Amino acid sequence: MTTRRDLLAGAGLAALATQLPLAAFAQAKDSVTIGMTLEPPTLDPTSGAAQAIREVVLQNIFEGLVAMDRTGKLVRALAESWTLAADNLTYTFKLRPNARFHDGTPFSSRDVKFSFERAVAPDSTNAQRWIFTPIAGIETPDPVTVVVTLKQPTANFVYGLSWGDAIIVSQATAANNKTNPIGTGPFKFARWNRGDRLELTRNDEYWGAKPSLAKAVFRFISDPQAQVAALRAGDIDVFTNLSAPEAIPQLKADPKLKVTLGKTEGETILAINNAKAPFSDVRVRQAISHVLDRKTIALGIYGFDLDYIGSHFSPLHPAYVDLTGAYPVDLAKAKSLLAAAGFPNGFECTLRLPPPAYARRGGEIVAALLAQIGITAKIEPLEFPQWLERVFKARDFDLTIISHTEPLDIANYARDDYYFQYKNPEFKALIEKIDRTVDEAERNKLYGDAQRMLARDAVNGFLFILPKITVAKADLDGMWTDWPLPLTPLAEVRWR
Image (cartoon, rainbow, N blue to C red; front, side):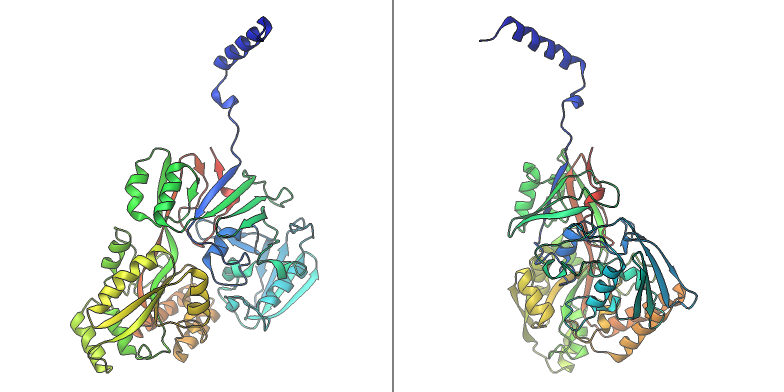
């Protein structure tokens, strides 16, 4: 039964409510749900090359000595500072004295030594061992000092330390990082429901500034239309790399959402198995390059023009050389090259495609273009773990389409065991010279030579730079527009 006192009390509250702003009753949001197309195969970025691993864990769970900010600039992370001696060989890193791993273990110089030596050990699965192979020795004179001596001057050594492959891990927990990652970052691993979502929680003992978010959930939605539906329904707060570009006008018209179009370092290529006949013949690869109409491919996938490339290098870098005119679309020239290589009537091959929309949609268009010169490309869709095993690791493929999202990854072409198997001693020597060249202007000139060599040899079909389509709720701030590295730093994300 409602009494007169209850009514008066209610009236008093109602009157108070009319005098206070609504914000006084609003509960501040402290969680975010982020949509991703691909699910990471593991949660250890030193265990494989999958971009999705880094999107979730880099600068969230795991940290390196240095980090990369949203502009591509190197900034301090677990190292408070670093200096390079006059000999250009000796780096001294001063470490943060108050950093701890999520299990409470203090971070120290011995963890750096362990992580770097682990990266080049015989059983290492690190996809970017080149970062660590220049190291001649590591000394740890005290818990907060690491002295790294290189075999030779290496211009991009510190740059490589910002990559996910150079995270610092604890010897006590490293073996379990694939499924139970323990790092020093601002967020801790909470749970992983495979095939659905992964949850992180704030690390309240973090050495740096306390993040605004208390929890972050990554949801894995591969179907492009399901991504759009989840955004419009409010089931997710942001999608980091939308796979449905045709929905951009519809999403831009929704006042509850904001759409940003950014750039990545993702050189998107038609990768070719250079060690497998008939692709081992440069004339066959050149013929393929002469039919790859980049604009047709881009419009077919995205509906708008992109930043096109003619070699494996980002237009954002000052050393970029525009080689998109090296192989103009020329069907007669392509057929002539095939005939000279012994294939006047073309041949059959497989085109193995991972799940991203740029690959699946692009594959259909590329197959149609190749058919014009008699190359019948049989499309074989693969899930991403299959693609990693068969194409990337086992090199069991003819053609594939993939984006390489790490910056300055042109050096991969000097690796004999890399999946497209380009073995060119001249190129290898050039990359070694680049690594030793400290002068930036001279190094950039050599990068230009490297780009021209890859274009000359038509190592792969060089297509475009992968765009970054981010769709977020209008009051969510802090998501990166561009991706100098593929990551989602949750410590920068907050609600207005």
